[in-house]
Amino acid sequence: MIIATHVSAAYGETIVVDDVSILVPKGGVTALVGPNGAGKSTLLAVMARLMGAKAGTVSVDGLDVTTTPSEVLAKRLAILKQDNHPGIRLTVRDLVGFGRYPHSKGRLTDADRVHVEQALDWLDLTGMGDRFLDELSGGQRQRAFVAMVLAQDTDYILLDEPLNNLDMAHAVSMMKRLRKAADELERTIVVVLHDLNAAAVYADHMVAMADGRVVAAGKTPTLMREGLLSDVFGLPIEVHEVAGRPQAVFYAR
Amino acid sequence: MSVLAPARTPASTTAPRTAVRARSNAALVGGVAALAVLAAVSLFVGVADVSLGDVLSGRADYELIAVSRIPRTLALVLAGAALATSGLIMQLLTRNVFVEPSTAGTLDFATLGLLACALFWPDAPVLVKMVLGTTFALMGTAVFLRILKVVPLKDVLIVPLVGLMLGGVIGAFATFIAYRTDLIQSLNAWTTGDFSAVIAGRFELLWIAGALVVVAGIVADRFTVAGLGEAFTTNLGLDYRRTMTIGMTVVAVTSATVVITVGALPFLGLVVPNVVRAAIGDNARRSVPWVALLGAALVLLCDLVARLVIHPFELPIATVLGIVGAVAFLILLSRRRVRG
Image (cartoon, rainbow over all chains, first blue to last red; front, top):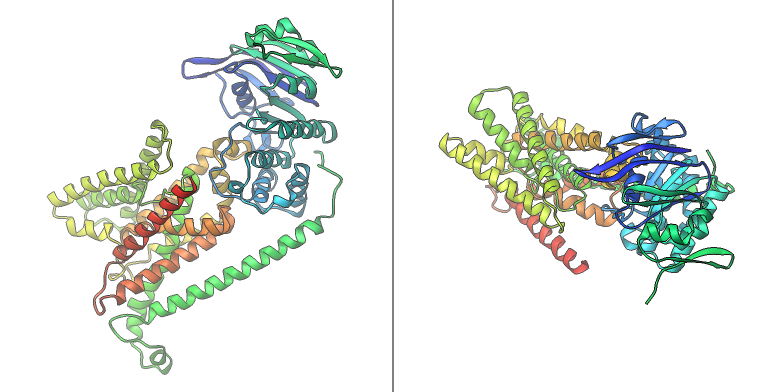
């Protein structure tokens, strides 16, 4: 369980997350949704101790993220930000291998290698292990980064807009894998999503944010409501039942 | 902790990787052997004739070999390996393939530190000089990193240009001071790499730089992780700022020792890591040995050219390295343009 209590965060004078308290239950997929600038990514960064909070606390299974040693947290929680540019020339297998750093400090054991190969396998990258990241397509690279946080073998995985730059087929396949990781590997996935309908299909819980505050949080069907979503996004949104699932319709002429 | 999927036999995946590792180890052994040959050639080239036959038959000038030839070859190997490794570390930590001690102003700051020492404590022990040179080099790195942080740089090429400009300003300032205080000769010795004055007793500081290459090899994984960026580093439980400090300290100490003993060697840290990067990538655990090896080899080779091209006189090695490095730098730039 991740508990954020009265968390505020700011860039300089601009407050981006304003007195947010949420509870992310253990297990399943939790989606953070909301318009640009709602503070979703910042909240995620604070939860993963990438950014300090101005006020408030975050705990992961009872461990305060600001006081717990970073290397201890790295075995409990993994985060992948959006727009990852590797910057350095690594093979896919090396990158995923660095996901084992919290466990092995770089000296990979046979057990670590098994984790790495399984993470590659899980994201369909086995044949690409020896390719360099700069030789891959955007979608393949994104999968390699996700394989890395998967190999980290943490209970919690936080992902900031993992569908960015993915076409529909890759987006669906990514969401299916995340869902499977939650169901079969018992990982708790917290994901910032721009695609409401992806959240409606794949998430168990949703947190809707606007202007740095949480507007609503709960089980997915309770958030997929027209009035609520229209308020959050500042846009008329209709919700229709499609194939037994609520889907938002907002493109209108 | 959960295991990912139904476990497959690890043997099926690790066996071919072991073979790959064995092959790359064999290649490395071959590289070391080639370096040894190059070092041997370096031992027997010079104004005074020393041949292998003389050495074996006991007719050689052993004093010359012990006092001049061996120290010179050792200094070449140590300085080359250390400065090339420093280039790799800087490139990983700044995430920019064009940054190295001579394109980040680090060598110029180290020189300024030595000049300050010469002004205020002319007969300071060599360790004091080293500490001052290192301190200035670290300050220079801090200034450089600060500029990178404050000025949003869209193009990777601007970063080394800013560094070169910073180095130019510091260099000009140092020249002005040296001119006013009659220290131009000392300044030239620091800014222009030259191994002709290396004799026993005047190069041993370079063992420190050599030891730092070993340190870099040991903590290589941290540098690779830091190369992935601050968020990745924190996610993996590593202290980003501490890693930066360790890396930049290694670079500063190396820069200071090289400048004190033989003078600045331009572009070395730029050329070598980029050649290695193109071949085997940036995983520092794998690339540090190769960068050190090729750095030593390139310096040995350039020194041979410098000694032979106007025999019996010799060019400063910095001149030869400057030409080789500048050409390589231009090739790197143009290749980048084509790809971009």
